Length: 263
Image (cartoon, rainbow, N blue to C red; front, side, top):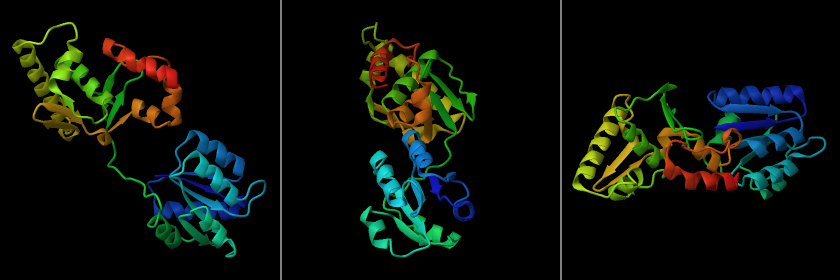
C-alpha cells in the first residue's frame, strides 16, 4: 500500500508518521511538509491513501485533495486536523476518513478499514518479468532457466496477453509464424507447454500458469512486470522504456510501435 502524509508542522507530521507505521508497518510511506511536494509526488507515483492536514500554507488540505483526485480518482483521502468544523467540507470531496489530532494508531487503523476504494493486497511477487529490451524472467532476482528457447518465447507471448486465455492454435501461429501448422508442430507445442510447466514447478510457481482445454494463460497478479507498470502509468517503468520491447521476437514489433506512440 502506497501512503503519503502531509502536514506543515514538523512534530505533527512525525506523530502521523509514527501512527501510520505502527498501524501498517509494511506500507510504503512518504511524508511531506508542503502541498507542492505532495502534488509533484502524486503526478509520478501511485498514491493509495493520503493523510492530509487541512490547514496548510499555500494550499489547504481540501484543495490538495481535489488535486489528488484529479490525478487519480481512486486515491483515498483521510484528513487530519485539530478542528472539527471542516467535517462537512471534507466529506464533500468524498474523503474516506476524518481524524482529529493528535493522531493515534487506533484511529489510523479504523480509517484504513473503511476506505472508499479498498487497496488490493497480493502476496509478495517473487517472479519479475522484464520486457523492455530483451525478454527475461527472474525468480528471486535469479534468471529462470528454460530447457528450450521456444519455451521462453511461449511465456513471453502469454505475458503480453496479460491473463487473457490464448487458443493453442493462435500461440502456434505466433511463435512459428514462418511454418505451416502440422501434427509435428502441434507435438512440438505440447512439449513446450510441458517444459514451461516443469520450469515453473521447479521454482514453486506452477500456479502462475492457467491451462484449460485448448487454451493457455497466466495469472498476471503473481508477477511484477515493467510492461504492466508502464500501462498503469507508474513512473519508473515509463522512464525505463527506451524504444525496445521483447527485442528478440519479431512478433513483438507491433506492440513496440504502440508503446513508442503512447510514450
